[in-house]
Amino acid sequence: MNHFTFHNPVKVVFGRGSIAELPRLIPSDANVMVLYGGGSIRRNGVYDQVAGALEGLDWGEFGGIAPNPRYDTCIKAAAMASAEGASFLLAVGGGSVLDAAKFVAVAALYPPGRDPWEIMLTVNQVERAVPLGCVMTLPATGSEMNGNAVVTRDSTREKLFFKSEKVYPRFSILDPSVTFSLPPRQTANGVIDAFVHVMEQYLTYPVNAPLQDRQAEAILQTLLEEGPKCLARPDDYDARANVMWCATNALNGLLGCGVPGDFASHRIGHELTALYELDHARTLAITFPAVTKHLRAQKLGKLVQYAERVWGVTGGDDDAKADAAIAKTEAFFHSLGVGTRLTDHGIPPEAIAKVADRLEARGQKLSEQVPLTRADVEAILTLAAE
Image 1 (cartoon, one colour):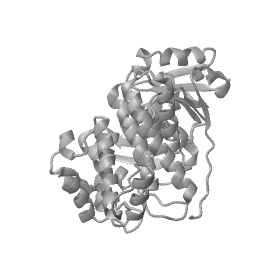
Image 2 (cartoon, one colour):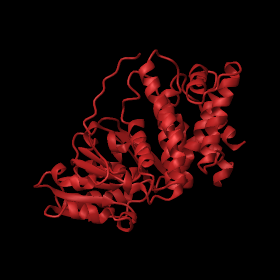
Image 3 (cartoon, helix red, strand yellow):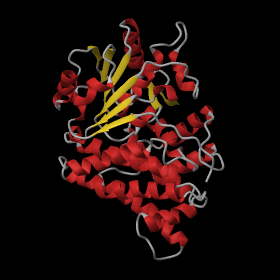
Image 4 (cartoon, one colour):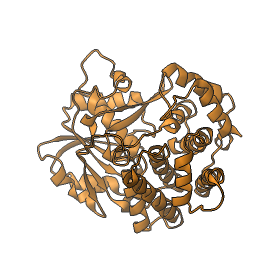
């Protein structure tokens, strides 16, 4: 097992009716800004629950945060937070709203005259941020229990991430019952997003970390069992609760302790979203199987383990087991109604060269062992086009 340091300060309040806990979680003297998305929280009653819980506190709101939160919108929210002296941010929504809130938390205190987009170009360089918490309504990204955020800038068609311990939520409220009204598309997206988060920390190479391996396998098996139940019975509280907790644990830092990670699928997927507005999870359904096929030889040991422990594949040699594991993973994504090819989502062939060019220009290190070249990225996306 590799050396590691683990720290996670997020208080999780989990269960039905937990939004009512807001008054004891937010400082009573705080000037609160509530951030939310396109209005679904008004239709499903979450807004009313939050407003009721905040009664007696000084609070305002900023709505209209889109999926794949936009830089320009975040800047408007940051300006409002700064002008109104917001001392606490409350994100109410899915990972996009929370990612936007994390950016706003930093941008609202950013030095005048400097472009806050700098935040996206550095790692762990954030000096201060407005405290924040969240009410999570869409289990998927794990943003509710980490210091990561992703923001899109339309003017440059870039989707980049930043991370900082300064933007860990002070608390995250997780009430599975608020996810009953999620459309099937968003439910499926959340399951796939969480699944791939786990796989990118698991499907690398063995480092004698059996606990982390089995923790990852437990989450994967739970998603396989509970994800389809959420689609078949949207108001199944237990299934929703299990998927929600899986999504949180998939990217709260625990699985990555002492093990290598390979987030190439995410990096390539971010470019597809920036260029073609495709849902984040659907880019992962395209890129993850293709990355795995391309790096099959270097991931063979863990692929075989994955085949045996998660899928119960015991017959055949190692190559046959690896092939079966990849095929079963794709079949699972298909069973959720999500295609795994570029053409399934209307992405044209020229995307292959465009994405390869952008990643080469960005100079990001991809893969956990030998860095991927431009030719590797093209080969991966070509596999995704076949």
